[in-house]
Length: 431
Ligand SMILES: [Zn+2]
Picture 1 (cartoon, rainbow, N blue to C red):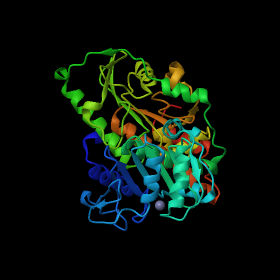
Picture 2: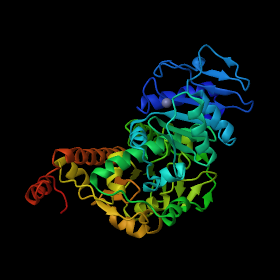
Picture 3: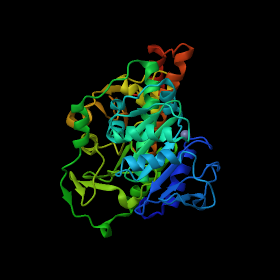
């Protein structure tokens, strides 16, 4: 969905509903604003239920302080206004109290955004503003000073977080990606030491998948099968977002159309709402004209070329699997028979493999080894169709969560070699 055509009232209402729906704010905490070309600031109202907010509830504050609308503006209006004054390039602000970011806020610590490439790409380094009384100009000054220093995301001591952006979606993606990063760092710390990416590795991710030649695509030539797969792909991406297996900025899906071509998610993309016409066709190694495929496109192509029975590939960063990924740890599947049957052994590949060693990637990921952890880059699963691959991703994330949940009660006890051997015999699995 393109938010460019929305009025600030509608964009704020939709975005706040999304933040509330996915438990990134309580009903009383959090406020959003947009500054328009006249200098008017559109902001959420004070003391209105976030669960039932309507566009007509949004308040407009004129540059001279006149308030237009049925409610009082958010009590945090002073820091929104101060951020806009300090940084004319910022046109929207998201402020809320999501749990993992609050954990950093009350521990007076900064998250390491270099543990996952998306977090660093969206947030860079994160600022930390000293405590100020909520709603005070003192808090506004402290937050604005950090934005003036160049930070786009600032954690507020004993309070929450404030993210700015060139538009509201930009600010929201920054906010959601930072919350994922914080949750991951917290979960990963139960497993071991989260590893940071080097500047060289972060650069590698940025450049990947660019420079693919294009071909002229004619939508009138679209087959029924292609229409079906474009729509299915959108459905599963949206479902992945709803199930929190993806965020707005993380996750790549592709599906094979025939021996020479596959469909893949575009870049940039908000996984919350993808349309069939946004999906990118890759045919004989060329991309559909005027569209950009996701970063993993070359790795996906190598896997399709090497394994004719693989028809779908998903990269995703659900938080529990991501905790293993940033600690460079494999996920043990000897937990439940279902996990072992669906996933077999889940190995670990270095971060660079996705970007510059596609032969190795295609050797490692196969019908025999359909799931793998990618260091600092989430997980990859493959399968015979979209549903089976999506299911595999859900099983992998559940397995990762169960292992993490078992840690405070003593850790899991893997099924032994004899049990695994019996499972292989019973389900006819290749050993
Ligand atoms: Zn607040």
